[in-house]
Image (tube, rainbow, N blue to C red; front, side, top):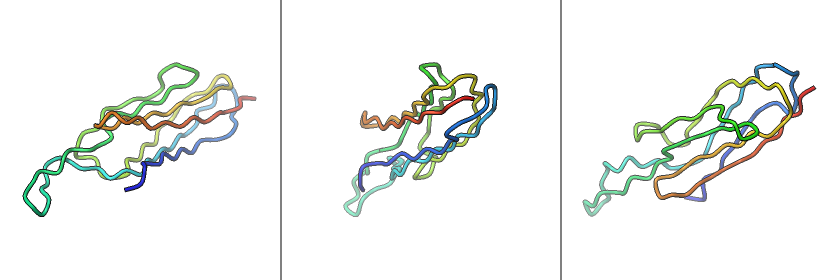
Length: 108
């Protein structure tokens, strides 16, 4: 599979104190580590095991992900924005790979 690609959707601007909806999706083949290949060998576990979102360095949302999550994990959550800044999204893979994206928001 190609390199996992994170996608994030949030408003470009908001009013001070507004609660916005953030949607994230990362294209990733999740492998539970319980299946076997055609030769009977266990296919190594490969999942996104942690997701975090920060706003201007402060934590907004985070979760640990278990093997039962399907491929291409999708998260939707709300955040209150009081000032302009940058959201940073991070996904961590079992093999230590880290995928991230940043999105700015203007506050009026």
